[in-house]
Image 1 (tube, rainbow, N blue to C red):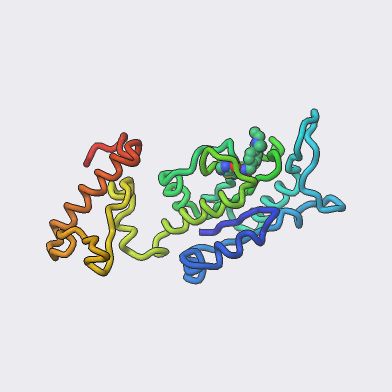
Image 2 (cartoon, rainbow, N blue to C red; image 1 turned 90 degrees about the horizontal axis):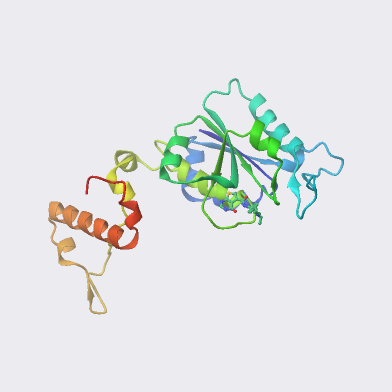
Length: 232
Ligand code: 9D3
C-alpha cells in the first residue's frame, strides 16, 4: 500500500512513523508513506496556504490551490488511479471504526489531507475528496493526529505487517470484544494471586475462561459493542 499525507506540519509525523510497527512495515515494504508539505505546493508569493473566509467571519480557511496541486502532483506520479482514495480528515467525516479501517486496508493507495484552521475551502471537499473521516466527537487543532491514528490502524491490517496470528483473527468475533484479564509472573504478588485456571495447563479450559471473561467485561464496560452481535 502507498500512503501520501498532505500537511502543513510534516515534522509531526517523523516520531510516530519512525518507530515500532509502522517503521518495520515500511522496512519490509508492506507500506510506503510519503509526507508532503502543503506549503511547497502554494503558488502564492508568500507560500500562503490559508486566507480569510468570503462573507466574513472569524478564523482562516485553507486555500484550494495548494491542496489541488498537491493531490494532482501525487496522482500524476502514478500510472493509474485504480484503488486510490482521497481522504480528508475532518470533524464532519464519518467516524473511524474497525470496519472502515478494514475497507481502507484493501486499497492500493490512499491520499490523506490534514485539515486545519476553521476548515478547508468547500471546493476541495466537493471536487477532490472521495471520503471524509473523523476520529471521534471531540475538537482537535488539526487533522495530523487523526491521520496518524488512521495510518496506525490501517497499516496493522495489511497482510504480513503483524504476522500470521493476526490474519487468522481477521474480522472474527474476538475482535469486537474487550480484552480478557491478563497476568504475568509472579503467580503470587503481595498476596494477590493469579486465577488458578491460568496455571492449570488445560488449554481448552483456559480458552473457555478467557472467552467468558471477555464477554463479561464487554457487557459491563461497553455493552454497545455487543449489540449487533449474534454469536456469544
Ligand atoms: C472550532 C472550529 N470548529 C467550528 C465548528 C470547526 C473545526 C475545524 C477544524 C474543529 C476542529 C478542527 C480541527 N480538527 C480536525 O481537523 C479533525 C478532527 C477533530 O477535530 N476531531 C476528530 N477528528 C478529526 S479529523 C480532523
